[in-house]
Structures are given as structure tokens and as C-alpha cells.
Length: 454
Image (cartoon, rainbow, N blue to C red; front, side, top):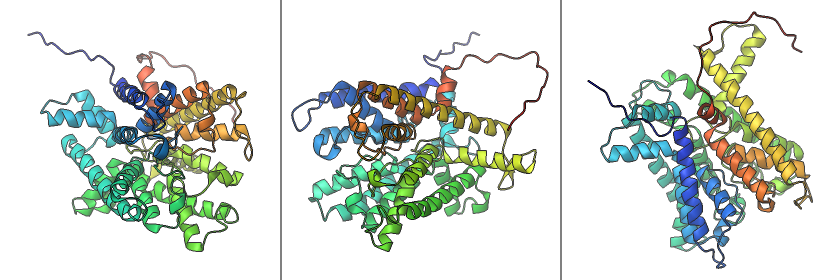
């Protein structure tokens, strides 16, 4: 009996790459075709930039979305943000399930590897819970935000503002219809805490939400959470607290000087949360100290958690490297965390992701510096190098914060930032796996020889 196996058109690692590229392509055509309120059409390179930024949930923008794009273009961006946040592979699998079709083993493996730890998780149930969590969280967020926006906008516009900002926050996109992001709401605990909560829930990862939901229902003990969830929650909490204290200390006499104490704490907390991947701001980054910007660069590079809507090298990657460094400094042969041993494969992946990410940011910055050397970037308060380093890190971490360089990029600069956003969303390791040659089996090993270090 002859078995006829259907040959895949693309290798499995290229599925998400092709999926995101397809959405960006279609989104670019839509944005280019839709006229702006001025009557002009968005240049094609700008349309590709905006579509990439939305699909890769980055938030870098060449236009004031609220005033320079019409409602149809805003709706198109909102759809791309939602699709990009959840991921092409997840949405396509949901559609296949809805049609009653069989999900391929490779698609099943890719989704489980992206959104779960691959163990004890029924894919159909998990995907349904991901969609349910997303709809419920975004709906609750929109309802809370509507109460605040209704005091400033007509009801219909307030509803759209609430939905747009809720989806943008949960997907960690950073797009805002307001001209100053959230600076005009820095004194509103309802808006700031709601947006901050949405960002944390979207950036913590679906596996953590899934396990937390099970623990809440009594199906799992809180102590029995997976090592991944423990590392994600611990590292996220540490970064939020330490980031809040950092912003308070560094900006007390500058951007926070004129604010009351409660607003100082609220603004610092929000910036600590949003800096790692979302990109909203309630403070003026152009007026911040160099030390604050240095800390912001580090937070943007770290990013959110794996399997989430955020980017960066991921919190668990840094947590594994910290655990590895601690073990080596103590002379321990094994790397431990929460009374569990971290596998050698996990350590190698964490190291690879970190190194590849650093290389991407350095090369991206180098390209921007070279391409923008003759461009008249605004340099009133910051040098060009810092602006472009900040831009490259923000694009790779899919953060969306900028020191003002985005709207002044030339053609080459825009292409470079587009590439950084695309790579940052998919992950350097995913791209490396997609293009690496077939592995060969080594039949011999070379002799071991020490190398002096330090």
C-alpha cells in the first residue's frame, strides 16, 4: 500500500514568517489605497512601515493616527494589531477548527511550542481559552476606558477610543489615537491602571494566564505552577517594582518635578510597565535624563514574556541567564530555579536568543547611523547616535517609544526599522531556525584545549 504524503509548500519554521509577511503585504495595500483626511494617499513605503508596525505590535508611527488617518485606516490598523498580537498561526488554527478541518501535526507543534510548555495541554481547549481570555480581557478593559473617555468625547467616538486603546494595550502595540499618547491622562488612575493592567496581562504570556486560571478554579495548586510561569511572574514583578523605583529616582527632579506624589508614583509605575514592550507614555521622554534613557534601553531590550503579545529577548531568557551566572559563580554544575533544574537545551537557547538579539540591535543601529548620517534629524536635546540607538532598540523590542527620530527617517532608515520590527516580532532564533541548513551528524570530536578568559 502506497502512502501519499502531502508535501508542505514551506518548511514549518517559515509558516509564521510567511503569515506575518502576508498580513503586512495586504495591510500595506489597504493603507496605501485609503485616502487620508487631507485627500492625499499614504506613500507606499510609509504604508509598509505602518502595516509592519501594527502587525508586529510595535507602535512606531509616521503619522498622528487620530488626526491624519481616517476611521477606515484606523480600523485597518486595529485589525492588524489584533491579528499580530494573537499570531497568524493561532488564528489560522482557530479558523481550521471552526471549519471542522484537521489541524496538521506541524501546526499543532508550532502553536504548542509558542504558546505552551508542550506538556499536559490539550490544544483545542487551550486555543479556545486563549480566544476567550483575549475577548473577555479586552472587553473589560474597553468598558473601563469608556467611562473615562465618555467625559471627553461623544459616545460613539468614546466607544471607538476605548476599544482601540484596549486592544492596543492588551496586544502591547502602543498605538494611540490621542496626539500625546496618555500624557493628558497621567492624573487619571482609571485610565493609567487599566492600561497598565491590560499591558501586563498581554505581556505575561498565555501559558501563565492559562495556569493561573486553572489555579483560580482549584484545578491546580499555586505551588504546582510550571517553572516557566514561576519565572515569568517573578521576573515580571521584579522588573515592574525595580523599574518604578528607577523612574522615581531618576526623574524626581525633572519630568516628575511638577506632579503631586500620588501622580509621581502612578506615572513611574506606568512607565515601568509600558517601557518593556507596549510603548505608551504618560511622561515626555524627550525631557528625560540620559540615565533614565539608559535604563529604558535595557527594559526595552528585555521585553515581555514568551508566548505573549510582546517582543524583546523575553523575561525568562534573562532569568535563565541570571540563574546560569549565579550557578557558575557559585561553582554549581547544575542550574537551578525554584527547586527545578534548567535543562542544558534551555540554557543554550537563552544564550543564543540573547546574543543574536544583541547582534541585531547593534547592526540595526549601525545601519541607521550610516543611512541617516546626512539626514537632518532634530538634535536640540539629544545626539543623533542616542536617538538612533533608541529607535533601533525600540523597533526590535516592538516597544514603539521614540526620541523623535521616526518621523524624520529617510527611505533607507524606514526600511531598516521595518526589518528590525519584523525580526523583533518573530524572534532572531525563529529566523535563524528558518534559514539554517540541515543538520549533519558529526562522526568525530576534536581534542579539548583551554582558553584563557579575563
